[in-house]
Length: 497
Image (tube, rainbow, N blue to C red; front, side, top):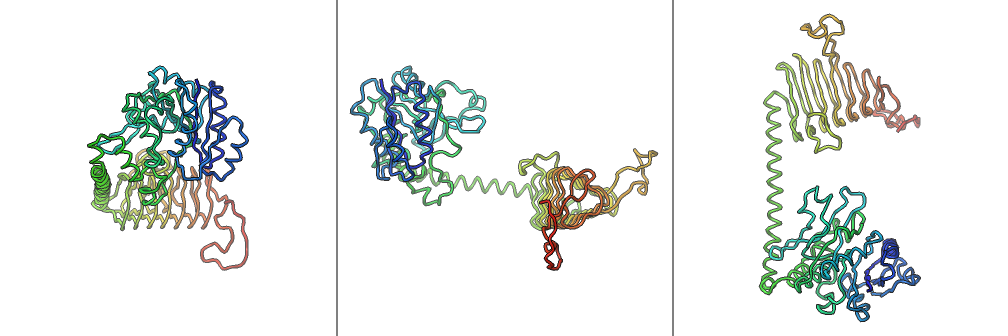
């Protein structure tokens, strides 16, 4: 028995080296015939392959594509294949363990000389399983991965093998006799994408089981195959390297369908394409409409409680509001209040809370500021400038809440016993996560407050403020000329940025 391995390549020499090394480490290495179809590589692949005595190189001119390259490999190996031999399709951006080929062969024999595919594991992913094999609904022009039908627990502990509707070219073993009985690739019709699915489904219609062994694992980088995410819509729909190529998909569904399905394929494809586009747009529009309704309701709640709200204020989640009847709260234009951890990088301990607890107290938040899960409580006045950014769970208050004296510390109705002092935060200040700003603090514009700092006092413009108690540890201004309103004098200052 021999296993004839066919690997189409175009550039990516480092991948070719890796897959060949993996093949040479196989437990069945002595039974392998390795054929690399080099379709016009320009990165030194040809020179490298010439130096590999155990590799047969077939050269193309860059126009074979995947289907044509596999067909050239089949033409080379089939004449010498015996009844017990196998053919293995591989891509060069894969690698695998030492028993990989042996696992494929054993699975094929155990399932009556079945065609056997591999599962794909992705580097650095948990769980690593990212693909089992395709499910295909020919009538609805739909393809999805069997993996999507499994629960998370099943994905972590899958069964030993699965039946699928087709097999990909990223590691599939076929008994060699199948190609003699049912033919090879059809590169003129399917030069690239869908060619692997078509030949597998052709064998399946002849009664050949299509099995995927979860013990036959190919490892892949995070982005494998051809990434078309940045392509224009024209290249996505009509590019030969695109898996979404309209013409190739139409040909594929015509080839694998029944006579009636072939006749109706163009009409069904147009119907389902437009239905999915329209459904997708309708779903997106409905989601946006629902979100806008929720946000509008939350904004109206703020206004109903006497808060002055500017234009285009955005609320992620519902903030908590506590307003004294004789106090003022103003939220400027385009302010973002984030009270939901799903919309920010750091987890929030609680929603944004804004509270005025005494008559005459005021809170103002300047335009274009962004606040995530902060607590802002005023008994006097808290003024937050424009374009201020706050990390998660910042706390700002201008009151001690309780008297300092031991007597009556728990309960005191005498406001004079509780110290307050205004807080002012200048424009364009950045406040790190979990920072605490106490009463009587004034922070100059452009300053940075480090995460976890406990801040009280007056701080100049552009200060870098850190520690407990916080102090100035540097300046954001590299020269005196960068200070707002400064005159050019060529003086340079130290900076800790």
